[in-house]
Length: 384
Image (cartoon, rainbow, N blue to C red; front, side, top):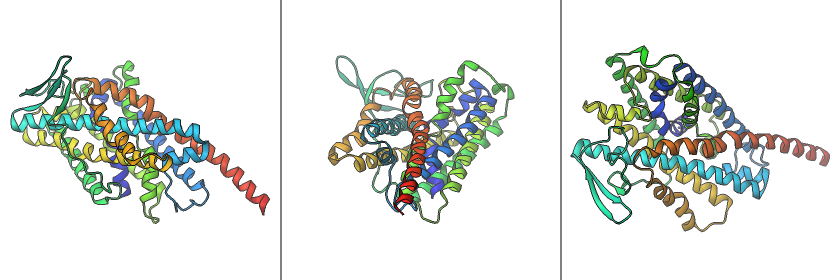
C-alpha cells in the first residue's frame, strides 16, 4: 500500500512529457537528471521522516504530524505562514495541472467516441455555447485557444471521502498504471525504434526546461508526512521510500526512452496525445486511461492533504477551507484549460512552489531538527 501510494504521487502530469524531453535534450542529460532527483527526493523524504521523529513524543509516530506542523514547531508562526503558503502552492498547482489534463482527456474522449464535445465559451462581450468535432493538432484541448468557462471534460465527479486511507484505490491505480506502461512499451517496440530520434545530447538550451519537468516528477516529499501518519508500524519507511522512487524512476526512463525512440513527439506535446492520435482503438483507449487512472485519483489527494495541513495549524472555518482547498483550484484551472498555457504554468509552479516545498524546506527542517535534538538532549542531561 505504501509503495502504491508514493508511486501514484510521483506519476503525475509531467510523466507524459518525458518522451518529449528525451527527444529535445537527449538521453544522457535526462537520465542523469532523473537519477539525481531520485537521490535528492528520497533523501529529502528521509530528512522529513527523521524530523517527525525528533518531535518529543513522536519517536514511533504516535501522533499526527503534518508537513506544516513541523514548520510551525521548529520555526514559529512567521516562518510557518511562509512555509504553509509554499506547501499550499505546491499541492494546488499539482492539483490544477491534473484537473486541466484530465479535463482535456475527457473532451478528447468525447470527440473520439461521440463525434464532438461542447462547452460554454467566454468572450469579452458574452458567453456562448461552443461545440467542436475535431481534436487539436497540438494534442491539448480540442477547443484550442478559446477560453472555456466549462466543458464536458470539466464536469468530473471526484470522491474525496476517506481517500488517503483507501488502500484498494492505491493498489488498483498502481497495477493499472503499470499495465498501461507495459502496453505503451510493447507498442513502441513493435512500431520500431529509431536511435536518431533520441541522441545522447541534443539541445543544451533545453536543459533548464528539462530540469523543471523532471522536478515535477518528484513532488511527493510534502505528502510523505500524511503517508507516515497512516502507515502500519511494521512498514519500514526507508525501504519503502527507496523502492518507490526506484520503481518510479525506472518507469520514467522506460516510458520516456522507448516511446521516444519509436514516435516523433512534437515539442510541448505529450505522449498521451501521440497515442490518442494513432488511430488504433487500443492506443486511443490507453491514452485516455492514463489521465483517468493516474491523474484523476491524485486530485482529491492534493485537496485532502492541503486541507489537513491548514486545519491542523489554523483555526479556519471548515467552509472557508473547502473554498480554498476544493473549489479555488477548479476556478484557477479555467483560464489555462485550453491552448498551451498549461506548459508555462507547470514550468512556473515547479520552480516557484514545487522546488521550494519539496526540496528546499525539507532540508531546512532537517537542519533545524538536528539543532533542536542536540539542545533537547542537552537540557534533559542537565535535568538528570
